[in-house]
Image 1 (spheres, rainbow, N blue to C red):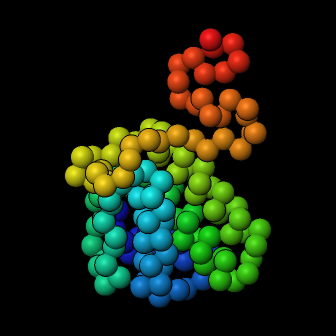
Image 2 (cartoon, one colour):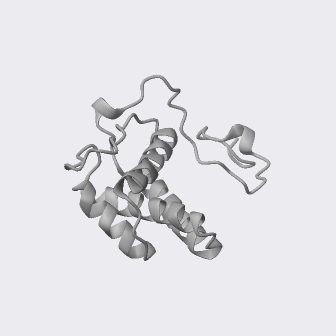
Length: 140
């Protein structure tokens, strides 16, 4: 997807007219979150780069970059409900990305442990045994 198109869509949704360099920095914040959550090394976008970004498919760019950058802009406006909604959409989509998108080998981060698991905030007493086929009180 072309960076200018992303910037335009983000500014339109935010009802703002931020400079492309600022919006691109917010998109890079989204990429940093994606990299951290998915054990990836997707490249950041150079703020003076206006060409097509190809490291992540267009569909995923739309559902990840736009809500995150929109959240950053609304956070700057102190629009709490709007930025919370945008971040919530981003993290929902990030979870889908992590579970359904196969990261190409060239973007895999080989410097982290591949022990991926979903944080469990349910106070599950069997959390210590998470990930084993027999975990739980009846698993044996």
